[in-house]
Image (cartoon, rainbow, N blue to C red; front, side, top):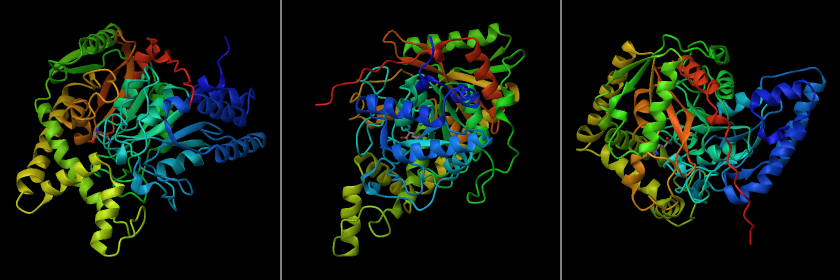
Length: 492
Ligand code: GLN
């Protein structure tokens, strides 16, 4: 059976276009048609840039017909709407930026465009990337293509749903505490969070600046490695971007894990987690062992402190970062008479409840008299969490564990209980606090046919070993080949 064009991976689509089997315009049209057919149901996109995409695709075809090539020439991707795109509305899922059109493009996106990408549009997200389900979007909730009554995960839920529903070949997300890996796991695709500083944050609207990192949502590990190679590397516009040389990550993809030491942290298999998740992850680890890896039981003793630390550090940074939305310089303005009244009304209307909660938490943690007790203490414990990982990586090459304690939950199930919602990040936030890298790869399904993700964690700048392990696993399993079949719902 021949595959429909929208079903292709990046590497297959490129190979086919290079052979002249179809054009970038045809591929882009196939994806735009898929979006038209399904996105009324899945709701992955906040903005679809159809005309712009077709222009970019035609330009890619013209380049190819002149004998030129580029690493992504004519490949249609989706971009999470927290990454600035010149001339294209960038909302961050917030009403305060509903009509904001940035005057510049994020470096990560610019590098993809220089490599020949076609941008299909901007995807839905929890407001300012704060959330785990996309229910905190100021506009609408994205649906999980495997079960439309469930969340796709968050905050990059729009990007994950778009890739899983094959409304984009791959997508960019961002990961401050799990926002790439969690939705990848809930949607049954690959999600890569690179090490802090590996990809420039210039033009990524700041949430928690010491945690934020651009990440990748893809159909397979090869596509993730390709996109990382294109985007990684120093950028003079972001002083925290690292100048370490960028390997060709696709060359790390050897499907051999013989002798690799894989750590299994006991703190990531906890009471109360969904038994099918534990079973699937343990089976994946045994699979890697049968391929020649050595499994080493390890301990990351400060894991239980990660959630409280994260929910001090992230809101503290967010409260400072979000001060710029003042109803004066850009974004929504209530136009009220006095300055303070205008602040109050603009921010009161523009921000949703979760963002307000984070601003209050963060402002409190940073306030005089509480700073030492909360923010400073959290930073100290953060160091302990980082040291846990550093010690573990003296003994092992990579760490294997679940991405999340459960599979995708129902829309509304946790919406009224922020603490419950925060718990879905228990296994993902640790490595943001430590600056490490990690990936989510599909490793099974539960009895409701919902995907389960295996998380592989590597040391700082250890992307190659993470990608290699994930690739070896993927090459010898078929979980990543399964796709959901979301039926279009008639719109009344
Ligand atoms: N769910 C976490 C939060 O709400 C992580 C979000 C993210 O990684 N952007 O902060």
